[in-house]
Length: 167
Image 1: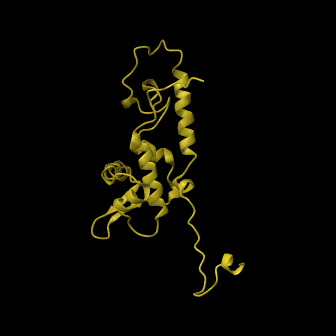
Image 2 (image 1 turned 135 degrees about the vertical axis):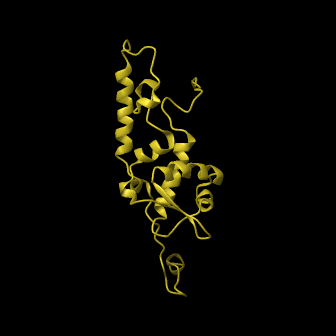
Image 3 (image 1 turned 90 degrees about the vertical axis):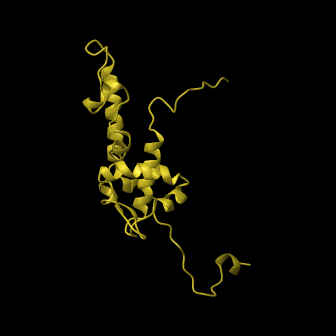
């Protein structure tokens, strides 16, 4: 069986800005209510380069998706309830307008035009693809991606482990 090799990440893909930025946002949402979190802590939790997270924080802050606090106990926090942050907002802040093809950008300012404009018979396909991606991203909130907190069982000091009691 022959496996075909492709020279890109896929037909439609997001860059590491999108991938790492979503992971950053999920971590910030998971820490919500505990105060600012340092990017160093998130970098360690997610095994990501801290310097890259610092670059990703800039457009997220400009989009008012996160806030920053300076100082010894400073860091970053999500700017609002994760249930109100759609993943489409996050990815647009990081990647720019959705555009599976240059002729199908959501933002005309990012679409320099196409030599086939007016004669193209497939532009409606690319617009449908763009709209389907937008709908999928609009349907997921940051809260949907935050894992539930793990429960820690607390036993009295000196209590016997259930497995040990059966022996």
